[in-house]
Length: 355
Image 1 (tube, rainbow, N blue to C red):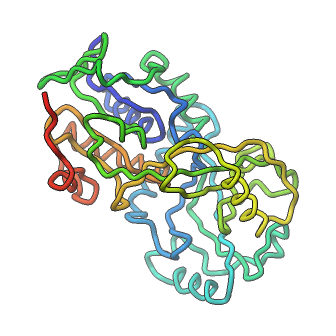
Image 2 (tube, rainbow, N blue to C red):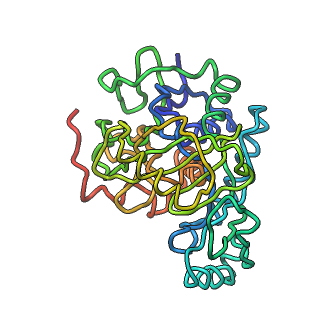
């Protein structure tokens, strides 16, 4: 079987890159075990604002302007409700945070994301917010699990192989690469934290941070708002909510812990007044990078090996535009920004691989 591109890994980054290929009529095959993707457990929140520090996400306007229409189009493509316009209510903890919010909302570059008028807690009496809420607008939630499932089922059923890539069976030549019966011109690795086991790209400084999350049921809580206190509380339908997440840079397993569960419950109880039932407890490893920027680009030794990775907690927001940049780089020879190009790590980390 001959194809233009082999995609390895199918989380939200792999899906967005596959969509670039599909839109440009490029042939491709996806190889992924699916269950390993951190995207399956992610909240799927599109948020252009850093709620801890009251400043915009890096290149937030560009990412947001590309992401919102992308997911609306994907929703139409798969014929399933996967995109939800939802405001984020950030709980303000004191007068100082109220003042910081007002100052941020008055800045020209932020007024499109933030409402200057604070929201009284009386309007959301189920939540403790003694110093009101600040509202983020142009925020949303993408149902990653549903989107990935139906994209595979309806759009690429014959182009998806459910298996874990065996690197030992990958033959890389100058003009092509071979994996079992698949012959491709190029390969794009979208493996998330699993990239640290990739013999071609494991030199990159992918730190990884473990996140534990809870799924809860809360019958009386509104499902039209994402709340942000010490943690996120996001509706996922059917009176169920995503609660998270922890951050642990030491533990690189996907095992859940009693400590993580207790921490999440204690943080949730700080602001949720209602009783809730824990339905599930999960953990995954986010693909975070030492300089907090994504990883895009071409392998320093093999011209037909590429990577799209390192999106951390911003995968849903950033992946559509990053995929476009990488496609443009590969197919049209445009330059990548030095902020995302993996060349920034070449001198310090890369050692030539033995043939």
